[in-house]
Structures are given as structure tokens and as C-alpha cells.
Image (cartoon, rainbow, N blue to C red; front, side, top):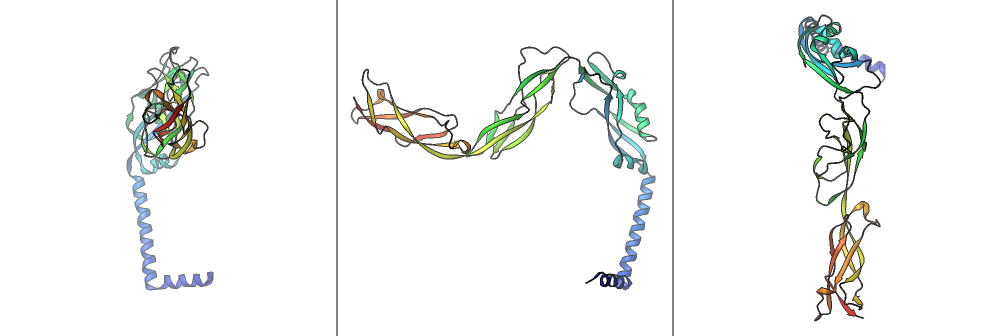
Amino acid sequence: MNYKELEDSFFRWVSSTTGHNIFTYLIFVIISALFWCLTTLNEEVQKDISVPVVIENVPDNVTLMRNEPIKFNLTIKDKGSSLIKYALGKKATLKINFFDVKLNENTLKISQQQALSSFRDLLGQAQIISFKPDTILVPFTTLLPKRVPININNESIMTGPGYVISDIRIKPDSVDLFSSKPISSELTSIHTNPIVLNNISDTVTIAVNLATPKGIFAKPDKVNVTICVVPLIKGNKNIAVTPVNMPENRKIVTFPSTVNVTYLVPMDYYKSDDIAINVVADFSKHNSATSKIPLTIESHSNLLQNVTITTDSVEYIIE
């Protein structure tokens, strides 16, 4: 069907009784919507808005010790037509001179009284119904920062069955600490808040806040922590038996001299050279009646789990 046929089909439908009724109904709906909009826009309505505060003319040697945005929350009342600009237009921003709100050598104080006149200029004829908070205090410092590494508090991270944490990465790995007083030399690192994760079975990255001591400001105040999780897979290896507690000036030969050991290992380390297992045959526990010595696993790599020897003892001869 070409365009001409579509056009003819449309006009035939509009000319029909059904098409005429639907078309008339739509026109009345549009007119009603326009009248409703005009009526609403002329009525006074209340709206909650958030007005960010920008501190201007901050000296180069000053660091504001606050990570969260500085803002006032207002409830205003005005005609709907006037309030459209707060929803669709450029957001109002309160700009305040650093030296106009400097309370002392360590704090800025932005009071409701100081902000009201500026708000009236920003909001025009709008009526301010409520204004929170009453006062905003912003600590600052002129002292140089101290850079320290970050330690991860990961004691509450639990993997699901058959999975293990292969690595934990943090970005950034160090932060700048600021304070209005010299920072103690004993503060050499900073921890994250506890990370609580349960039954994880895949690598995950989360933003974690830092546990900063009172009076200390960290920049940034949160870091990204990546917990790398991999499945455990079964592995095995032939391990040489090491005799211990042998008779003085005697040598023990075990049969066999190597035994097979099975274990679970993170998939990423399956072929790693760091897989170390020490199997010992303790002569002090030998059984002379059977000429056998029991085997034990004295130590193994921290990577491994469920380490098991396929045989519990070996035969021996003394040379």
C-alpha cells in the first residue's frame, strides 16, 4: 500500500460515523487537558526544592573538611506557572563568599539569616514556607594533609559453598587525611568500615566508607573495594614423603617414596607453583609389627582446603 492509498483510507475513516465520533472525542479531551493545565498553573502550589551552596573565593591554602554537598532544603509556595522553572529550568544555586561566613580559624558558619536575603533574590515572588537546616557549619583547615594507606576490614565477608576469595583489591589504596590540628604520628593507616557480604559466588565491587577518627577528614571519604571470588576445584599432586625423628646415624627408606595428595584449590591457582604440601612419616610412631609408619600432613599452602592423603601409612626399611 502506497502513501496515496494510506491517505485515502485515513480520510474515509475520519468521514465515517465511528471515525467522526472518535475524532470529536479526542478534540474535547485535548481542550479539557488544556483548560486543566491553565487552571493548575494559575493556582498556588507548594514544592520542596534543594538549593546547593557554593563557597566562593576559598583561599588556595584552605581545605573544606566536608564531603557531603552543602545545601538548604526549602518548601516554597508560588503559582504553578512560576514553579515550572524549578522543575525544568536551571537549578537555583546559592553563592556565598568565604570571608562573609568565616566564623573563626577553623569553621565557616552559614546561617538562615545570612541565606534568606540571597534566597529571596533567587526565588523572586515565591513564599518560603520552611527552611532547613537553620545553620550549616563547615570545618576547614590550612594544614597540609597526611597521606596514609588503607586497610580493609573484611572479617564479615563470607563466600558461598565451593567458592573462595582469591584476591581483594582497593582503589585508591591510600588517602589524604586533614585536620585542624596536627595529626598524630601514631596514625599510620586507616581502615574501611566493616564489609558485610554473605554467600557471594561472584566477583563484586562495592563503595565502602572509611572509618575516620573524630576530628579527621579523609579525602576521598570512600573507596571502591573489589572482592574477587573464584570456584574451588579438585586437584591432586604426588608429594615426596619426608621421614622425621629417625634413629641416630640411620637412614629410613619408605615404600612408596611419594604419595598422592588431593585438595581443593582456587581455580586461578590450579597450575600455580605456590602449591606446597609437606607430608611426613614420623618414625617415633612406627609400628614394628607391620613395618609401617603413619603419614601426616605437617603443613600446606594457605590456598588449599580439604587436603587429604590417599594412603594413611607407608612401609619402611632402615639402612
